[in-house]
Image (cartoon, rainbow, N blue to C red; front, side, top):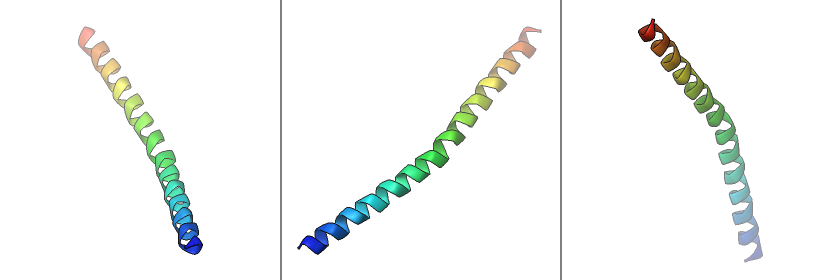
Length: 50
């Protein structure tokens, strides 16, 4: 029974590690997209105002 529990814990650790890596890779991409979108909106507003 203890072996099964240990294996389950390691599986959870691997899952958490993978989720962490995915988050680290995905969140900067979202930040870049948000920044790019905001910049495009600002540039668009400036062009419309001019």
